[in-house]
Amino acid sequence: MTDNNQQKSLADTANPQEAYCEAIGRFVVVYSYIDFYYALILSAILDIDASEARKIVAATDPRAMLSLIKSLVDDLFPSENLTGKINTNLPDIRNQIVHGLWFLPSDKRATARLFHRSRQQNEMKKEGPDKEDGEITIKKIQKDTDHIRQYCNELAELLALLKDRSSLIKIAKALNKNIE
Image 1: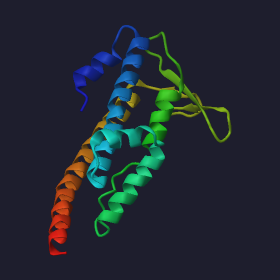
Image 2 (image 1 turned 30 degrees about the vertical axis):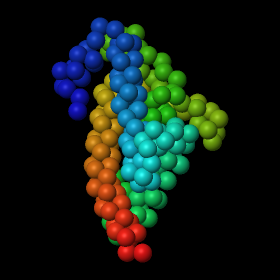
Image 3 (image 1 turned 180 degrees about the vertical axis):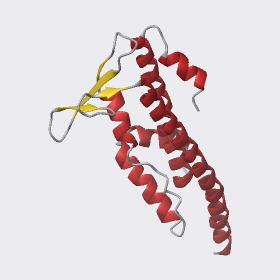
């Protein structure tokens, strides 16, 4: 998780524009690990090389990838709720931060304004704690980044379960071939 000293120094940076850019950059880097985990999970489920799974993930819309992973895991292990923690709202958070139009403050006491274009209405919408003024703080971005880190930990736990189980499935299939 984010170190409190790191949060404090980032929020207290002399140049607030740099602080926002650094917070946004950290969010993007941490979020990129989700695709890495999705590829490893696909690799474990489909019994394919991780590099091939990365190609699938790269060519697939995030929502479709989430749906595919949930479907495959639920089909393999129908009596368990292994996908209960898969968060389908993450692409929205990412799109708001990565594709938003940022107006960064020059004053340390001010907050950034974030706008994003709505696909449905093709208009600019304000994002932030108060939708009226579109303000968003560094702490909010850091909170989202910490949320993504926690989600990556949950994906790692799911991957560990799947790897253990996929090994058992491979053994069972091998045994079944010997029976035939």
